[in-house]
Amino acid sequence: MNSALSLRQKRGHRRNKRLSRYQNQGRIVDGLRIDTRPNIVEKRGRIGDFEVDRIIGGNRKQALVTIVERKTGLALIKKVERKTAEEVKKAIIDLLTNIKHSVKTITSDNGLEFAEHKAIASALDCQYYFAHPYSSWERGSNENLNGLIRQYFPKRMVFDSISDEEIKAVENRLNHRSRKRLKYKTPYRAFYSLDSHLDVEFSFYFYTETYS
Image (cartoon, rainbow, N blue to C red; front, side, top):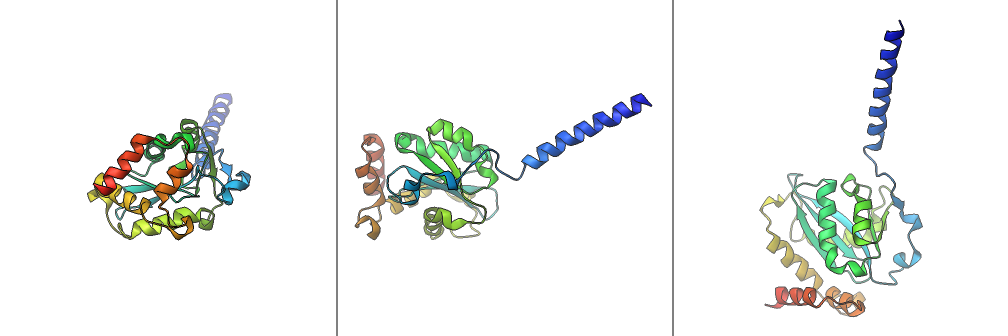
Protein backbone atom coordinates (compact mmCIF):
# COMPACT_ATOMS: atom_id res chain seq x y z
CA MET A 1 0.00 0.00 0.00
CA ASN A 2 2.73 2.41 1.01
CA SER A 3 4.81 1.50 -2.05
CA ALA A 4 1.82 2.12 -4.35
CA LEU A 5 1.17 5.52 -2.74
CA SER A 6 4.85 6.43 -3.08
CA LEU A 7 4.78 5.47 -6.76
CA ARG A 8 1.70 7.62 -7.39
CA GLN A 9 3.38 10.57 -5.63
CA LYS A 10 6.52 10.20 -7.76
CA ARG A 11 4.46 10.03 -10.96
CA GLY A 12 2.48 13.07 -9.88
CA HIS A 13 5.72 14.94 -9.18
CA ARG A 14 7.01 14.09 -12.68
CA ARG A 15 3.71 15.25 -14.23
CA ASN A 16 3.95 18.54 -12.30
CA LYS A 17 7.48 19.07 -13.57
CA ARG A 18 6.37 18.38 -17.14
CA LEU A 19 3.43 20.75 -16.71
CA SER A 20 5.72 23.46 -15.36
CA ARG A 21 7.99 23.12 -18.39
CA TYR A 22 4.99 23.13 -20.71
CA GLN A 23 3.61 26.29 -19.11
CA ASN A 24 6.90 28.02 -19.85
CA GLN A 25 6.59 27.07 -23.49
CA GLY A 26 4.72 29.42 -25.77
CA ARG A 27 5.72 32.58 -23.94
CA ILE A 28 8.80 34.68 -23.27
CA VAL A 29 10.23 34.28 -19.77
CA ASP A 30 11.62 37.25 -17.78
CA GLY A 31 11.20 39.76 -20.61
CA LEU A 32 11.15 43.53 -20.03
CA ARG A 33 7.86 45.09 -21.12
CA ILE A 34 7.84 48.04 -23.49
CA ASP A 35 6.07 50.08 -20.79
CA THR A 36 9.37 50.27 -18.91
CA ARG A 37 11.37 51.44 -21.91
CA PRO A 38 12.80 55.00 -21.59
CA ASN A 39 10.59 57.69 -23.15
CA ILE A 40 13.47 58.90 -25.30
CA VAL A 41 13.16 55.71 -27.34
CA GLU A 42 9.55 56.46 -28.26
CA LYS A 43 10.51 60.03 -29.18
CA ARG A 44 13.40 58.89 -31.39
CA GLY A 45 15.56 61.31 -29.46
CA ARG A 46 18.87 59.47 -29.92
CA ILE A 47 20.54 56.83 -32.04
CA GLY A 48 20.99 53.31 -30.77
CA ASP A 49 17.41 52.13 -30.25
CA PHE A 50 16.65 49.17 -32.52
CA GLU A 51 13.61 47.12 -33.46
CA VAL A 52 14.03 43.51 -34.56
CA ASP A 53 11.71 41.14 -36.40
CA ARG A 54 11.76 38.23 -38.84
CA ILE A 55 10.25 37.59 -42.25
CA ILE A 56 9.29 33.96 -42.79
CA GLY A 57 10.04 32.29 -46.13
CA GLY A 58 7.47 30.51 -48.25
CA ASN A 59 8.44 27.05 -46.99
CA ARG A 60 8.32 28.33 -43.38
CA LYS A 61 11.84 27.03 -42.76
CA GLN A 62 14.24 29.86 -43.55
CA ALA A 63 13.68 33.41 -42.36
CA LEU A 64 15.18 36.86 -42.69
CA VAL A 65 16.12 38.54 -39.43
CA THR A 66 15.48 42.25 -39.91
CA ILE A 67 16.74 45.06 -37.70
CA VAL A 68 16.11 48.80 -37.97
CA GLU A 69 17.44 51.74 -35.97
CA ARG A 70 14.49 53.92 -34.93
CA LYS A 71 15.96 57.41 -35.37
CA THR A 72 17.77 56.99 -38.68
CA GLY A 73 16.14 53.94 -40.26
CA LEU A 74 19.44 52.10 -40.70
CA ALA A 75 18.54 48.57 -41.81
CA LEU A 76 20.34 45.28 -41.23
CA ILE A 77 19.24 41.94 -42.70
CA LYS A 78 20.49 38.37 -42.33
CA LYS A 79 19.10 35.01 -43.44
CA VAL A 80 18.81 32.12 -41.00
CA GLU A 81 18.33 28.56 -42.20
CA ARG A 82 16.06 27.74 -39.27
CA LYS A 83 13.94 30.23 -37.34
CA THR A 84 14.98 28.90 -33.95
CA ALA A 85 15.81 31.08 -30.96
CA GLU A 86 19.45 30.01 -31.17
CA GLU A 87 19.81 30.88 -34.87
CA VAL A 88 18.00 34.20 -34.44
CA LYS A 89 20.18 35.07 -31.44
CA LYS A 90 23.34 34.45 -33.47
CA ALA A 91 22.02 36.54 -36.36
CA ILE A 92 21.11 39.52 -34.17
CA ILE A 93 24.47 39.50 -32.41
CA ASP A 94 26.31 39.12 -35.71
CA LEU A 95 24.43 42.02 -37.31
CA LEU A 96 24.96 44.42 -34.40
CA THR A 97 28.45 43.54 -33.18
CA ASN A 98 30.17 46.04 -35.51
CA ILE A 99 28.09 48.86 -33.99
CA LYS A 100 27.80 47.41 -30.50
CA HIS A 101 29.03 50.68 -28.96
CA SER A 102 25.88 52.39 -30.26
CA VAL A 103 23.28 49.77 -29.26
CA LYS A 104 21.21 51.00 -26.31
CA THR A 105 17.93 49.11 -26.63
CA ILE A 106 16.33 46.40 -28.75
CA THR A 107 12.57 45.88 -29.02
CA SER A 108 10.79 42.89 -30.57
CA ASP A 109 7.47 41.10 -30.48
CA ASN A 110 6.83 38.08 -28.26
CA GLY A 111 7.71 35.37 -30.76
CA LEU A 112 9.62 32.43 -29.32
CA GLU A 113 12.36 33.13 -31.86
CA PHE A 114 13.41 35.87 -29.42
CA ALA A 115 13.55 33.62 -26.35
CA GLU A 116 17.33 34.14 -26.12
CA HIS A 117 16.84 37.84 -25.33
CA LYS A 118 18.98 37.69 -22.20
CA ALA A 119 21.96 36.31 -24.11
CA ILE A 120 21.49 38.99 -26.79
CA ALA A 121 21.31 41.78 -24.21
CA SER A 122 24.40 40.46 -22.46
CA ALA A 123 26.45 40.10 -25.66
CA LEU A 124 25.56 43.60 -26.87
CA ASP A 125 25.48 45.27 -23.44
CA CYS A 126 22.00 46.70 -23.98
CA GLN A 127 18.42 46.49 -22.71
CA TYR A 128 15.95 44.21 -24.51
CA TYR A 129 12.21 45.00 -24.47
CA PHE A 130 9.05 43.27 -25.69
CA ALA A 131 6.03 44.95 -27.25
CA HIS A 132 2.54 44.02 -26.15
CA PRO A 133 1.01 41.00 -27.92
CA TYR A 134 -0.83 41.84 -31.16
CA SER A 135 0.48 45.44 -31.08
CA SER A 136 2.53 45.73 -34.25
CA TRP A 137 2.18 49.54 -34.19
CA GLU A 138 4.55 49.57 -31.22
CA ARG A 139 7.24 48.43 -33.67
CA GLY A 140 6.21 50.62 -36.57
CA SER A 141 9.72 51.15 -37.89
CA ASN A 142 10.27 47.43 -38.31
CA GLU A 143 6.85 46.89 -39.86
CA ASN A 144 7.69 49.57 -42.43
CA LEU A 145 11.11 48.05 -43.11
CA ASN A 146 9.61 44.60 -43.64
CA GLY A 147 7.20 46.08 -46.18
CA LEU A 148 10.13 47.55 -48.12
CA ILE A 149 12.03 44.25 -47.99
CA ARG A 150 8.97 42.40 -49.29
CA GLN A 151 9.24 44.45 -52.49
CA TYR A 152 12.40 42.46 -53.20
CA PHE A 153 11.50 39.17 -51.50
CA PRO A 154 7.70 38.86 -51.85
CA LYS A 155 5.37 36.69 -49.80
CA ARG A 156 5.43 32.96 -50.49
CA MET A 157 8.96 33.28 -51.86
CA VAL A 158 11.19 30.43 -50.70
CA PHE A 159 14.38 31.87 -49.22
CA ASP A 160 16.70 28.90 -49.75
CA SER A 161 17.69 30.27 -53.16
CA ILE A 162 18.52 33.77 -51.88
CA SER A 163 22.25 34.40 -51.55
CA ASP A 164 23.93 36.52 -48.90
CA GLU A 165 25.11 38.83 -51.67
CA GLU A 166 21.52 39.45 -52.79
CA ILE A 167 20.48 40.22 -49.23
CA LYS A 168 23.39 42.61 -48.75
CA ALA A 169 22.53 44.37 -52.01
CA VAL A 170 18.97 44.99 -50.80
CA GLU A 171 20.25 46.16 -47.42
CA ASN A 172 22.64 48.61 -49.08
CA ARG A 173 19.95 49.91 -51.42
CA LEU A 174 17.65 50.66 -48.49
CA ASN A 175 20.43 52.27 -46.44
CA HIS A 176 21.50 54.55 -49.29
CA ARG A 177 18.03 55.76 -50.24
CA SER A 178 17.41 59.42 -49.30
CA ARG A 179 14.58 59.98 -46.82
CA LYS A 180 12.50 63.11 -46.47
CA ARG A 181 12.22 62.76 -42.69
CA LEU A 182 16.03 62.74 -42.53
CA LYS A 183 16.18 65.99 -44.52
CA TYR A 184 17.05 63.91 -47.57
CA LYS A 185 20.02 62.21 -45.98
CA THR A 186 20.34 58.47 -46.35
CA PRO A 187 19.85 56.27 -43.27
CA TYR A 188 23.49 55.24 -43.54
CA ARG A 189 24.77 58.80 -43.59
CA ALA A 190 22.37 59.92 -40.87
CA PHE A 191 23.43 57.09 -38.57
CA TYR A 192 27.16 57.52 -39.01
CA SER A 193 27.07 61.32 -38.88
CA LEU A 194 25.47 61.03 -35.44
CA ASP A 195 27.69 58.18 -34.28
CA SER A 196 30.82 59.61 -32.65
CA HIS A 197 32.47 56.14 -32.70
CA LEU A 198 32.39 55.69 -36.46
CA ASP A 199 33.88 52.37 -37.52
CA VAL A 200 35.94 53.31 -40.60
CA GLU A 201 36.24 49.76 -41.91
CA PHE A 202 32.48 49.22 -41.65
CA SER A 203 31.89 52.55 -43.41
CA PHE A 204 34.29 51.63 -46.21
CA TYR A 205 32.59 48.25 -46.63
CA PHE A 206 29.19 49.86 -47.14
CA TYR A 207 30.61 52.43 -49.55
CA THR A 208 32.44 49.94 -51.75
CA GLU A 209 29.52 47.49 -51.78
CA THR A 210 27.17 50.23 -52.92
CA TYR A 211 29.24 52.24 -55.36
CA SER A 212 31.79 49.80 -56.77
